[in-house]
Length: 176
Image 1 (cartoon, rainbow, N blue to C red):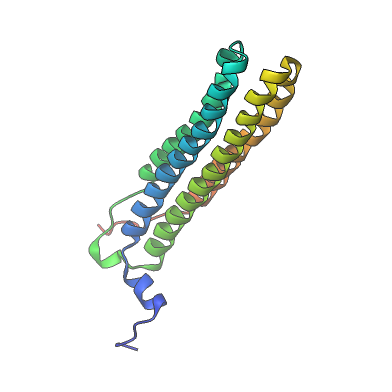
Image 2 (cartoon, rainbow, N blue to C red):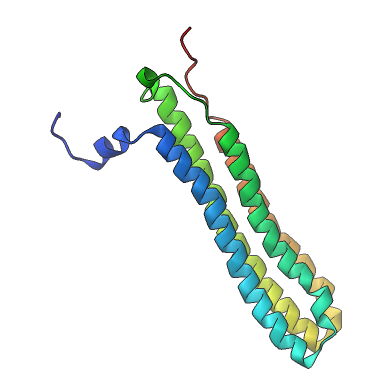
């Protein structure tokens, strides 16, 4: 077993702090990627549709704001996850409690990051549809905006699940 080079051995040898840092980076990085992608989708359709109907530009900016909220969700969760980090003695870095804390912060970051990626895409696509539909028929704006709000709730669900997951992150108590 001493010379084993399996994946499980490799994963156990990685510091829980590394997993925590990667989880925090994924939470913020992938959330910002989702927001940027959604803004790209919404913005390009908004600019194109505004050529036909300039009146839609200001009221359809709400779709861009919804996309930007996705990035803010990632920043908030990254801050929450960062506060979960605690220093432990080097003798307890690989203790089961430390591993559990590192893995839970890592899992929380992945959940939040990818939930916000999908949320950003969802809000971007719906925002694009909203801009194009509003250019054709202004009575559709509020109806599609309600759908966009439901799409934006996906990111909040990811944040809630991430916060619940990170609640399991308890590091070993320091020896006095």
